[in-house]
Length: 209
Image 1 (cartoon, one colour):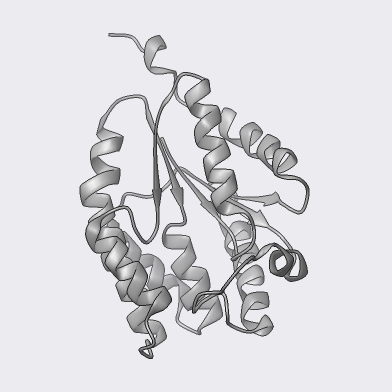
Image 2: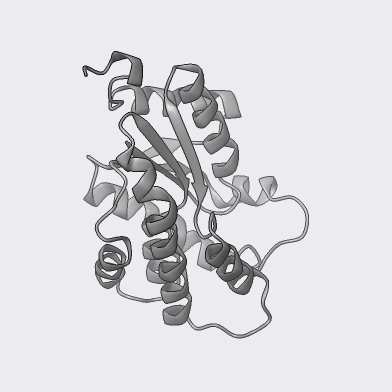
């Protein structure tokens, strides 16, 4: 099974990815975690370029760089992991991030980004995407320390992202689920567990030969 956790910067994705992975492991599943962009040598290099470089990078170039990192991650990591029966892959962001950030946020066409994503990933898409839904005020309160290029963008930009995530969830409620995420980390985790538990495959030990 392939699960992605999404949301604007400050929504609490990294914490929830870690908590979900630990719960799955404690429940007897093989779990692999990745972050997008990243998780490969090429992906980490592209991540630094996108988030730390002082170069001006247009929205279309940003989207394509993210897709290049993702294509490598699918080939090196996600696809081999998913070939192992009973493995659950949990991703910190995936294609939906580009749809929202470069689409709703920067003005590219969301449907075109979905199409590019299908090519870049070879059609390897999450069965379930959980979007941590928070207000802009809450997200900004949670951001600590120096902010990267994306985290430093203005409030209008982030409000478009929130609306974009909600819009995409309304278009595909069977695979994109909004999780109210302004409560404690434990409260949010409990909601995530409920959604994931309904879709989990059998544990490896329970699979038939």
